[in-house]
Image 1: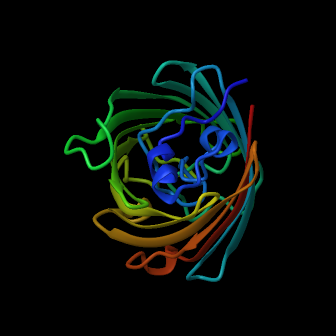
Image 2 (image 1 turned 135 degrees about the vertical axis):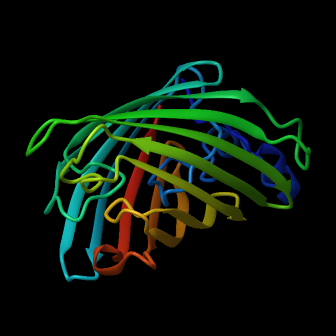
Amino acid sequence: MGRLRVWAVVLYGAFGLVSNVGAQVSPLNLSPGFPTQLDDAYPVNQHAVVIQPAIRFDKTASGDGRGRQTIDVRWGVGAGTELFVGGTGVRGPLEPGTMDDPRAIRAGLLYRFTRQQGPGGLEPSLAVRTTVQIPISGPGSNPALRAELLSSWDLTSGWFSHTNVGYQVVPGGQPGLQSSGVNGVWFMRSGFVKALWYDIGMVANVSYSQNPNQLGGNVLTPEVGFMWSIAQEWILTCGGGRDFGGGTTEATMRANLGLSWVW
């Protein structure tokens, strides 16, 4: 039976809390949106499958609220390789646009090409993630393509550092995604994960990106989140944050509650 790849085994050993269950499912593994936007360079274990439903809510400075129900499926198709697909079931207004199209099917590939040689190693684990978003309802049908470089360091003593750099392009104005005239958006994220206990982790990160709703504008987004391995195959996540610098289209509140089921 597959399990999430465990990159915290040495950490658990340092705490004297290594167990078969703890080594099979780590609450420190990150996926985009679980619990924050920060991603790591660690794919799902080979042959493992992870189903991740979540409820998400954001509110803009103009007073508009938007709720979404998402589900993502991740599959460890090979050593160091993960395939994923996801979509949105319930959503609010399309405007203002976001980096994640609220009416599209998302699919892509994560491939890790280097691996850190032990905790504290100078060379991080590095991976690339590619994502395509294809709208399936509403006005417009232009797909978006995203490419990201992901790096992850095990800093020892219960600390992990992750950095993401990426670029998303859409061939034209797309309601619900980037506004008209903003055909490409660059972004970067950096943050830390801390093991609070063998089954509980905390993440804090900051994103800085081009504003998808305003040509020439930039947005800063701090976020915090928690991960709790409530059972051997279940990880509960929650996160929140807000935007700064986006004017009337910035999100004054972002919140999500998700669950990962591994087998």
